[in-house]
Length: 177
Image (cartoon, rainbow, N blue to C red; front, side, top):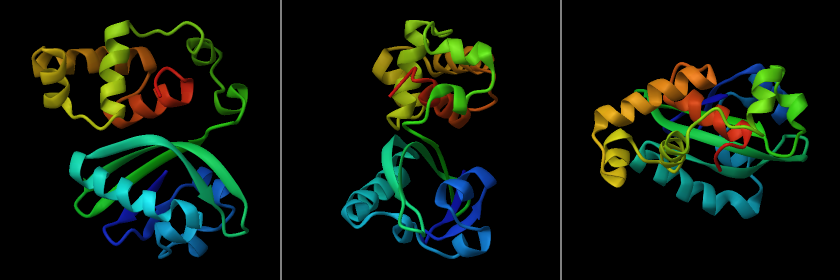
């Protein structure tokens, strides 16, 4: 996970992300997101940034560039303004074998037999696509309370505590795209 300010500078970077970037916190702090983006991806990241600020979140796949020049394709989820002027980015390597990413055998089996209902998967996919609870409710013709109930059940089934963690875990498990 990374925490980025409104100028798109890395403020905090957890250990896993530092390993992916192959850089220390000191090397990453103050660098802009474009500094770790392949040149051919810079324009699309500017568009993703604008979309995240507009909708509140973004998700998808992306190629990161490390300081040493190596590249890593990741599945990501970004949330705007988790704190005023600070934005959260979460990612996992897209091509690593599942058994290297998940150490819980029960969750490893979840990819093959989803613990979520088709409707819960639909709600979660809409969230991953950047929709908030009221937008999901409008699209599915249900009340926002129903959407919140779906998320409460999703949190329980995936063993998470919040919306962003649910989307990140579902992406990692391949339950949504």
